[in-house]
Image (cartoon, rainbow, N blue to C red; front, top):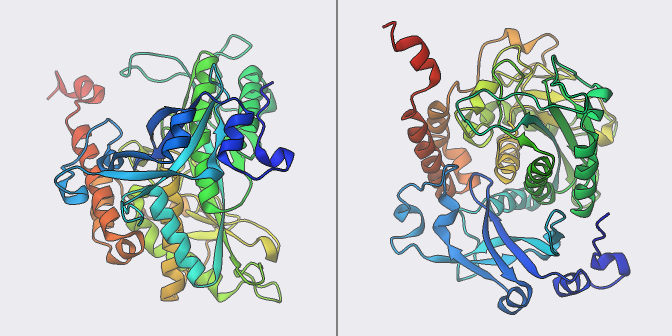
Length: 456
């Protein structure tokens, strides 16, 4: 069992120097999340990390597409491709549990040389949106639920993915929703994952087997949006690394297998009053407040306009299909999982909204920022929600974009969201997504070869 010693464990000031010393750290992974949610940065020897106090890398690194390209970055970072100053967020320091030697990881914040935040940075965008709530006297609280698939290792991207072999030596033949035995089939993987999550201080609460073959779900305890985004960011890497150690792949694609349900990252969200700490979605008598309705109204109006942050890839839209355990619209209802917006049954103190639209392929910082931005606009505009659905929302019309290009156009044309998320970020993010879409459009698929080669 790996034993990580955190300064708070022995009553000392939570300084990064103390942490590195007591854990005999040799190297530090200095990372930032780019727009896709991929970790970028440098690995520094411990002494250089401490003496430098910061990391400098090109601002354009934030503009990388998922396949490593960049749009013309001059309009977004300047013609000279300048550096930015990345400073460690000490609260994020953690042991890297799978490293052969003692290694730490620290997430950094991106700053301009004058100390202002880099508007292209996902962490900066999320922090900005949270600050808008704080100016109103509110504190957002979120809790993500993450679904992912375990799949057999394969090297040919043209072959369909398959469920992995468990301890029985057989792949799952059908769907095993909430099956304990199906989870136990991968006991060695989950035991090591649990150990790694504990050392990494990720605060994972619940593990269940979801509907798809080899599909799992992990729930996080509720808390601060930035802290939860950090934990999701680190968790994805932890799952992938653990899977590789057990001879399988873990994938956070939104729709990895044609006939299986997609994977979501549902986000539960509520608001606390900064002064009294009570849930502002509930009135003193326990009934729902007007703010609760306005928040839902904001999600209904603006979620379709910010879909590139909830469904960032072409594959993301394959998940959003009727009768496939994924929403197709922004109807809302009480304990209604067919809706894009669900209100779970709870007492007044725990009244919350669940956004079921985001896929698990999102950048967690941007998905958190986007859903909070939608709710914020609903509160500021005092929007009213539709009547709640008490039947299946899958029988209703599609209200979400059907593909990435449509989603990009909607987001680019929504001035209200652009102001909340910063215009510079919105323009750059849409440019990154457009380049990814253009790259995808050049690919000739197996479907085209199979059905068009000799028949048309």
